Amino acid sequence: MKSPFRWFWSVSMLLTLLTAVSRGAEIIAVSPAEAAKRVAEGKAVLVDVREPSEWAASGVAAPAVLLPMSDLNGERKLWKPFLEKEAGKELILYCRSGRRSAQVAEKLAAEGKTVANAGGFKDWQAAGLPVRKTKE
Figure 1 (tube, rainbow, N blue to C red):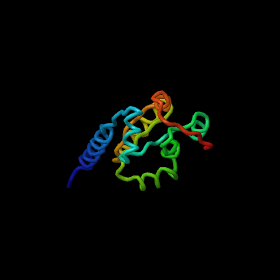
Figure 2: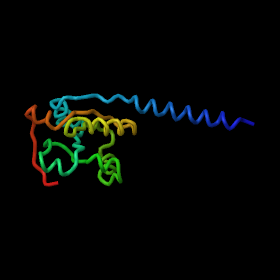
Figure 3: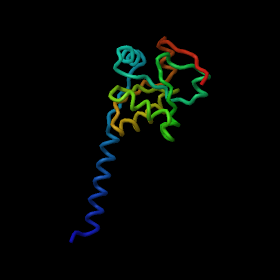
């Protein structure tokens, strides 16, 4: 008969290994120009992870899909169908400064998605890339 401690240790080590592997997923940073290029070529989807009030206040990158981080961390009413529809495409994320998009990228990478971080909306604007207004 095997020791219960040995079983617990084995499960614990497996969980530790899986956590380390998922956190080690590489998340690359891309410039706004490179993000725009990949989106235009159909290789990637640009996602704005800010909240609706932020979109309305500042506008958004013209090709961006608007999916708030709060939905990803909550019920995933918006994120779930989006991820199903865009399965296999690279997801390039941005927010106000790049911090939230990095958190979302880490979470999605741990779920096996191909992700990149384009930083902040201010970087997109500074690059002179197209923006649009939204009422959301």
